[in-house]
Length: 508
Image 1 (tube, rainbow, N blue to C red):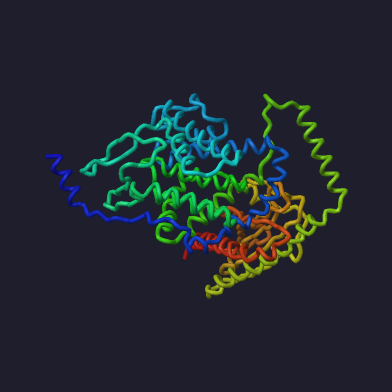
Image 2: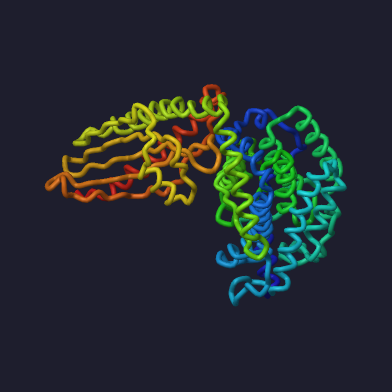
């Protein structure tokens, strides 16, 4: 009886086929994609990474944590295992140690989890070695990568003739022999490349990649296209998502960027943008991958030396500090015209930010007709005084605010019904350990003005949005066409949060 019910449901279910795979190409839609999400901060990373190579220990520690994070998250989003947030952070910082696990931290046996994690780590570490040794990108390399990442995975999920899920033997390092078209519960079936065409498509993938690199196409576009094209082919029975992220990471690492890691809480956005790219709209996926790279750059710019007391002596640290102070004194004794010109670009960026912010506020607040007064003003010149607002924003967002260099502040005062006044404070200041890094952050302040105005306390309300970060460089005026649209979107988001907060406090 049960079997009859299952059969009836299977045959009655309306199957809707969605063709994911089409013969791969680097289409015009990909050619038109903007890489501005990454480019606004990339010049600071180009400068900073030269310095980091002189202090390889701190940089290597930073990269090892990124590798461990990739190894963990790539399995979580594929549902190979679950891992609690707490032990995830410990593993990223300390390494994969089974004794750190407690009851409920994972949904599979601990030894199996450790096997998966070590396989994933070995695979991303292998990618770094491939880049270091300048190994040629080939189909055989991709198969080798798949074999490495599935070393301890013996089965994959498949379906029988009735549509029931079942475990089938996993072909490691070999292309699929059977269709692997997943079907959702609503009957939607996603059609990837048929096995008969996989070899030809994978050869084409390698050919197109070589052409893109030869034409010096932006590495973010290459990495994103490669990931999407590989997923559309789906050449292996299982493990395609993990391999796709490794291949994208290979391109990024080769261009001195960072591994591609999709965190578990970002899975929906990742899948949504993949599906948009399936429909000929790749910009969202490029933006998403660019934003992930930008976050890693922000982390690298804020990186500090971590001392392992078991391996580092006081004398070594004293020597390192003395060397760095000597280098600073030498640089200060020289006239660094390039640095002075770089820092002068703050004024250009600040003035453009003020004009952009003023336009966003005017467009929005002019539509409010009843009892709202507003005004935008800012520093005429960048101030070299310490800024409590910049420091507050930096602490809230956990980054290093460089208070030794000038900053600028823009204010938007909003008076509501002559009862309460709000100040949306925009701070433009240096962040991280490179002079060229600039953060534009926001803070909301409010104060009652009905009575006892002088004694009324000022309430500071953190806005739950990370600062917009960008780079100064001598070509800033040319890069403004990339920066200003991104900055405008940021200001719109800030104003949205501000007005939502004001509206929530008003009780008619």
